Length: 391
Image 1 (spheres, one colour):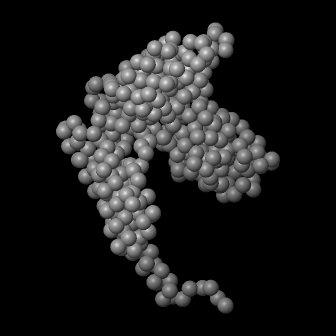
Image 2: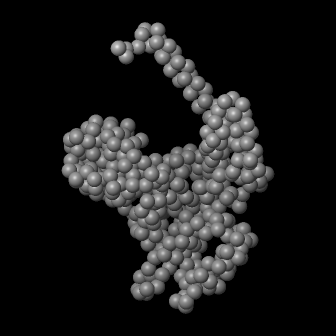
Image 3: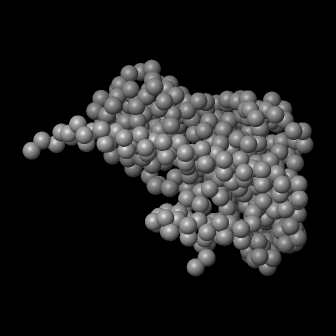
C-alpha cells in the first residue's frame, strides 16, 4: 500500500501549516506586547518605590490563567508553566534597571570583558544578562580569566563577566582564587542553561576523529566523549577557537559548543545534548570596580568572603547568626589560604539586601566570630523561587 499523500491531503496539510504559522506570529506579537506592558509597570513601580516582586499578584495571575486555560481545553500544568515563564521574563526585564551598576552614570553602552568570542557560551550569556540594562555592548574579548579581572581593575572595561560555578562540575577554582585577591565587586549574576552539542562540517559522526573544546566544556561531557574511543579530545583556549578549528579543518574535525552557534559558523549540529548533567547550568557573575548597590526594591543576594579563627566550631558559630535571623545561605565555598597551611577562607552567598535589618544583624554576628569579613557585592538575584498555584 502506498504512503504517498493524495493531492487534496497535501493541500490540507499545507493549509493547516500556514494557519499554524499565522497563529505562531500572533502569539509572538502578543508576547512582545505583554513584555512592553510589564516594562511600563516596572517603571511605575520604581517611581512609586514599590518592590519589583508581588507574590500575591503572581499567584493570582497564574490561578486566573489556569482557570481560563482549562475552560479553553488546555492542560493546567502546561498553562502554569507558561505563565511562570512569562512572569520570570517580566521580572527579569523589570530588574534590569534596578540592579547594581558599574557606576552612577547612566551609560548607554557598556564595555564588557569576557572569555571567548562569537559562538561561546559567555557570548550568549553576556548578551542575555545585559539586555535591558544598556542599549549596546562593546565586547572586550580576553584569552583567560586573569585578563578579564585585569581589564576591569585597570579601567579598560566597565564590567567583567565570568563563570563561577556549574551544576555538573561545581565551583570554578581559578575564578574563586581571583576573587579572593581582587578589589573588584560582584554587580550581578546570570544563570545560563548550557546545552553541549557536537558541531562540525560533517552531517554525522562517521568521519569525525578530533573534537575540540574548552576544557570546562570537555569535562562537562566526559561520559559521552569517553565512550567514543575513536575520537581524540583536544582542549583549546575557548569555544570560539574550537568552532574556528571545526570550520577550517574539514569534516574530520568537530567542536563542543552550543547548538545556537552552528548558524554563526556554518556548521551542522552533528550530535545534540551530550552534557553529563541533563539540567546543565552555569552561573556567571558581572564584576565592576565599585558598583552602586542594587535597589532595595529588588530580591537580592549579598556575597562575602571571610576567614574564621582556628578554634573548634568557629565556622558553625560564624554562620549561626544566619539561622538566628532567618537569612538563607545559598552558597558556601572554601579555598585554602596561601602561606597558611590547613587554614581556609570561605565564600558565602546569602539571600537578601545588605541593608535589610535581618541581613545586617546576621552579618554583624558573623563578623564577631571571623578574623576578617569582606563584602563582595549586593546585587539582584537572577533565580527567583516561583510562586505556587493556589489550590
